[in-house]
Amino acid sequence: MKPKLNIVLWGLLLICSNVFAQINLNKVIKNVQKKAEKQVEQRIERKADKAVDKTLDKVEEGVEDAVSGKKKDVKTDSASSPQPATESTTASTIETTAEAPSLTWAKYDFVPGTELIFEDDFSSEQNGEFPSRWDMTAGTIEVANWGGENVVWFKKTNANSPNAILPLLKNRSEDYLPEQFTVEMDVYFHKDYNLNRTYYLFFFDTKNQLKIMQPSKPIRVDYNSVTYDLIGDSYPGHDKLKPKEGWRHVAISFNKRALKGYLDDTRLLNLPNLEINPTGIMISAHNTAGTGKPFVKNIRIAKGAVPLYDKFLTDGKFVTTGIKFDVAKATIKPESMGTINYVVKMMTDHPELKFSVEGHTDADGELATNQKLSEARAKAVLDALVSAGIAANRLTSKGHGESKPMAANDTPEGKAQNRRVEFVKF
Image (cartoon, rainbow, N blue to C red; front, side, top):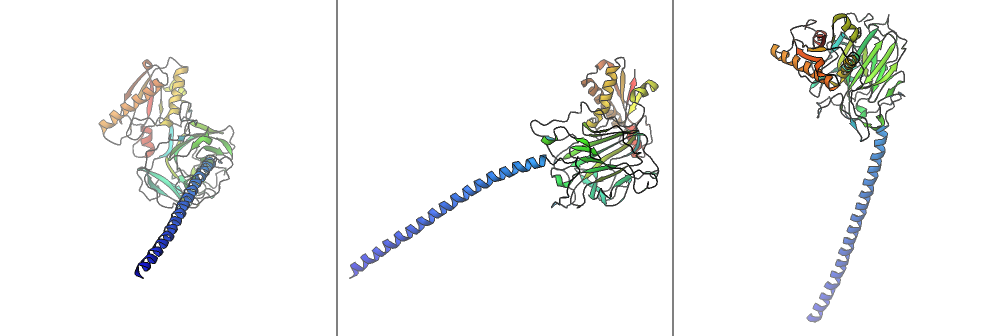
């Protein structure tokens, strides 16, 4: 009986092995099918994601609705304090597609006023404090460190109120803006459009000038547009520009009634007859939810003066603070090209003119260092004029350091007045 039993047992084992093998085979087949289905599903998802990304890119590129002024608040997840930027950025940094325009400054024609009314770069401020040379209407506004430098952070503001900062001037209750004046400032934009959308510049002071001010619409600055009461323009090729971390330079000029507004190297606003009398300045930004990071720095208000050529005819020279340099360097800032282009045109129209380009500094730093710096800056301006087509034999350069101040070095305005370039006839 045992041999037969063994045969039966072996038969049962063989059957069971076949059954288990079939089960395992079915399991393997199911796993392969499942894996294949998952790969197909992931592939479809990737293609769908690419399609969605492409659509979103088009939506983001078309977000330029500044002229309509109909933006909605969008909350973001970020409510943390500003941190230093991870890459070096400048006012002229902008990311473009292959066909998008680039910043050249070659035709920039903004020339700032020569008599400073107010200037602040916030370099001496304490992080987390309200800027000491400013007043405010409402909101939450403080100094923050961004990219290694102090800036004003509109931490929570509503420009419709408005919640704004205003210069802490002694005569701020009076009309301190002349018939001709200019305003300049640098504003920061992030890759994430929701972190800061819009900056506003008002031509009156709701806190100190209630008896004299003429309420008006603000100048509105978006990433690619400058408008006043829905009038203005967008940056050329704006539909092809993609936001990149960086500063944009804003320049505004007012001449009796005419208003012009520039964003970086291009004029986007030109109103011939603005029927208001500007009396003061307020600056604000869009951040009603308190989740954004709008930053402003390098604010300058200046009185417009006699045209530089007329000043030259009277004095045999003209002085400008419109040519600006990086701190402690001879690197010319791009927004200086308005003044440089003006000088180029002047010398082109009057081929008899020959100038000694003379640099001056404020009293910060060592005497010898400032002397070398002024010489290097004067030479940099000379080189820029030559590069623009002016013959080198019509120019010389020299530096005077801090030896010939025009104003006391105890205020930001005085220092800025001393950081100047003079064009002296020879």
